[in-house]
Image (cartoon, rainbow, N blue to C red; front, side, top):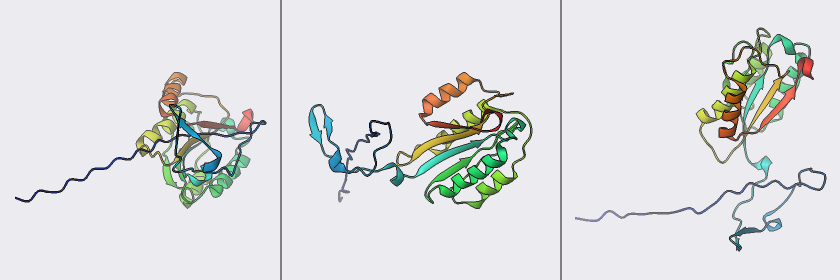
Length: 193
């Protein structure tokens, strides 16, 4: 009987994330592979691939607060959210998760999808601020989306920062954030802005 050939392979790439800033703490741009040296246990290793952040697609959870406490600053914030969505790259993905007394329903689409703008325009301003529930759901959304190491991940939260009526606690959110390792970028709107 003929033997079936067996093939095997390995990939020995290790991802190393770096941030380079100048003396003022501002990002240094336009760096190339030759600008870096990678040492492992004292031995120099080759750098196979170097990707700048703008070359890596983004998975973003966008959490806008639609409770009455942000109503004062919300018309301007709504416009900024739409401008922000328009500025994203076509390969970026957005999980839009508006909240008030209810969290969601969320919408996961490519950044350019018109349904994202439609949801921002039409979601009702009402109820209380279930901030911790929204953050917990935002962090959990990355678990459900799967770990894609080839994409950057972030959460942008627009709120006045006052929780009211959440099932999850601050500690629950902190643990979820720690497990997920996704950076949070809060933006103050309403009375907090």
